[in-house]
Length: 191
Image 1: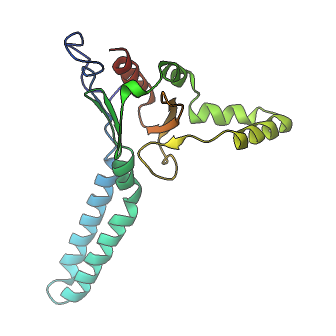
Image 2 (image 1 turned 45 degrees about the vertical axis):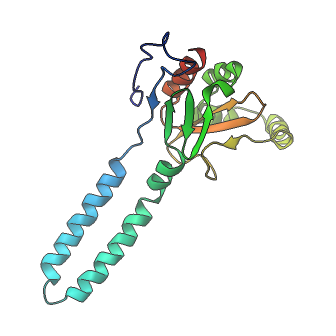
Image 3 (image 1 turned 90 degrees about the vertical axis):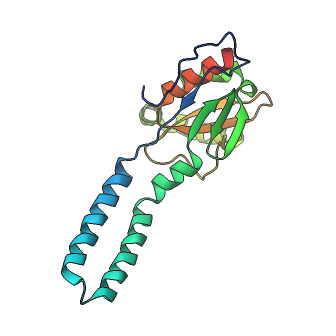
């Protein structure tokens, strides 16, 4: 899987979980594509408008900057809230850091077995109306997991895992590479 750096070499010499290094790279294609399209558009407009209509060109330049911000708001928020690192026995998601040893081993094993979002939606489609009513009632009783790193929900294009801390707090982690993240967490927890 792309996104994992390091293989835990030297685990015997390093303290608990220190040997595992993992960094999840976020996709950059969309940001590069929008920057190229807007740069080509601004260059084309400059060839038409400059030097006579420089005021209009500066207005278009400002408008393009606003468009770039609007088109890239989701990737920028993913960089702020959903960047994942495991280093020195610590899990960092966005601006939040916790020790890997605070995660329970059982919840990491369960994270491997959790269905992906697509599998979960497919299983909901095969349920009866009564089963869906019961699931809705049960979900209202249990406390939803807190999204680690912040944010309102899991961003589009990302998967999720739910783990639990030793204090019993469920944490939801949004990820692009689910299997690689769970493997790195298990290795860091067992080291």
